[in-house]
Length: 197
Image (spheres, rainbow, N blue to C red):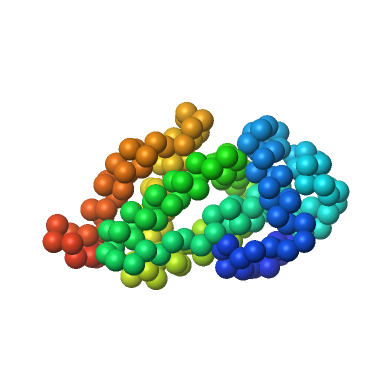
């Protein structure tokens, strides 16, 4: 666990106290003002708490947004059925989550900040990416590098569309993205394809 962050927890576990109000205020403020203008001061006011209350729980806006995204995403749905159904379900799930008001903006903003902030990058990797990577890796029976590539391709594509258009990807384009990704995880006969050494 990174020093100064909140304790690790499974994605989607309910929070107590002021956290739900702060998370709701974070997403609504980012949705209304954009990530850059959504300062901790501007988040604290609609949350009904002091700025110091937020900073006691999160050392930075980035750390707050990461926990806010964990709360918004909840656990990755691990569909029963074929690998194709699991991958398709996971892609549709993350696309829908990124399309929720404030969530895509928050994700894109914190991701952009992390490019030049090694501490935030570590928080993103360990607190946000790692739990989902492990869940998908276990469900798919794939090595880490292949699941990371799946996350890179899918999340990167969804955030790129949001950044370039200001809108989430359409359902038709999400379905096309699924069709593009599925061959990476199965041969023509449907068996898992192994990574090339």
